[in-house]
Amino acid sequence: MTLPVTAVVVDFHADEALVGCVRSLQANDVDRIVVVENGRPGSTSAYVDLDAVTLVEPGLNLGYGRGVNRGVAAEATNPYLLVANPDLIVHEGAVASMVAYLDEHAEVGVVGPTIERPDGSRYPSLRVFPNVWLAGAHAVLAPWWPGNPATARYRAPRPDGTVDWVSGACFLIRRSVLEAVGGFDERYFMFAEDMALCWRVWGAGWTVAAVPDAVVTHVEGLSRQRASRAMIVAHHQSALRFEWQTARGWRRLLAPVASLVLGARLAAMLALDSWTRRARP
Image (cartoon, rainbow, N blue to C red; front, top):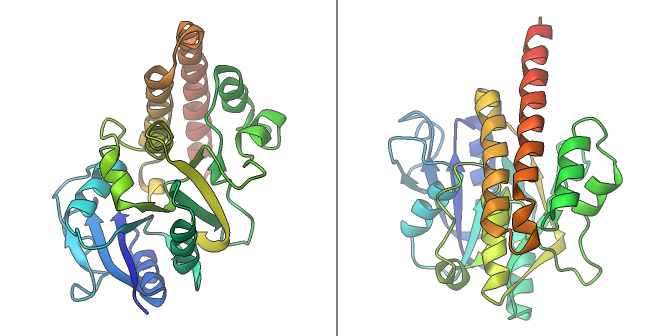
């Protein structure tokens, strides 16, 4: 049975991985598939069956959130929207599990699946909104000590299955909820747009939850490898934007501290990237 779901996939030179993504969506009985070409003009059409998908070709890289918004606008039939990276394989029954969860929980606006890496390890896709101290400790320690307590707390779901936010690599959202919050905030080019979206979903009165038995495999960072330094900069810019956008009261007074921490982390990550490039044969 076809599910009342429109999948929106934003492609940036995923190439053969995009083929596998589309096939897995078809195998999950998704009703409509929209692919947005954020890469070089013609880079997507070479890999997709144009009879099987709706292709949106803006002619430039819109960024992730803006790309999803354009994809959603291109097809207005189904009540559920599945947002997915192009380097993603959706396991059998995953979409049906997420649809069933939303059908059974009227208060939930967004659900995220379990995201695995190709080696079977779990990607930390379920997270809490960072406060100044948690975000600062995670930002400083995570690159050098991945298992530190701050990072573990940042990536821990609640016992009742709800989470603050889910990864934009893959999630299912009610179309009515996305429209009510105005879609993705297009001021975010890349990174943290998923966190900002879930922040507004919570603010509008819905909750965000995890569906553990819905599983996808994500080839993490396949597209961003083409422009690693630009992605590092975008990551930190988006994190800083979120902090200034959401900080209230006393936390607003500490936002300059967050700016300094993120600036120092950006410098360190760019230096590490340069060192890694030089070390490659």
